[in-house]
Image (tube, rainbow, N blue to C red; front, side, top):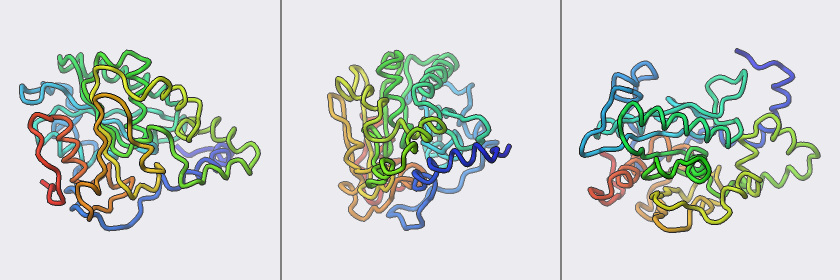
Length: 295
């Protein structure tokens, strides 16, 4: 379905502001790309989004993958989902934040509403698998949005660990680009009206102010943030890190100075990030992540 012209024009300021979110820079990464995976039709056959999957004793909690802005439940996870299913996890992924008339590109709706969609999906996964709790891995907005679920929607009793790959936990200034909004009267209103999920992620938004009041974390949940120094979308990159108990903040370049993955690559294909996420899912059997952690 095509966007009506009037709606497309209204969306233009938001799309221009967030051009970095949709463009995948062409640059090398220090770790080989994950093998290409079949599209959505093969997800269930590989154990991904298979609601008949029962967690094993080794991996007793299902893993819920939460895509980023402009992502969806399949494309964002063509690398990580097969990586985790091959290691014996029950893996599930959802779509959230859909806008009317905008197919495939999700995560654009109000984040509070998206967190409600996540809450419903977790309940569905728990009911199907019989597990008491899930673990979550999210990319970009998908690493931050679940914190609203944990803090305000009762998610803390249903989630053991949240692992964020380049999450915008304290918002982004897009290298200062958001400051330009002040010079275009009405631009912020246009973005908030047409793509509220984007407006919620800007530094200083009402959503983020409420989310981070009183501390970054809630009791009973383990948090891991995996960031890259070369993130061009969530800036400054250190704004991704969390403070509080049960938090581990990881910078990929501290593990391997040769890693040059940026915002998109860390979620789509960086095997070091995948390895570190697997460590966070199973800390008792964690192995050091190095430049050679590509298996």
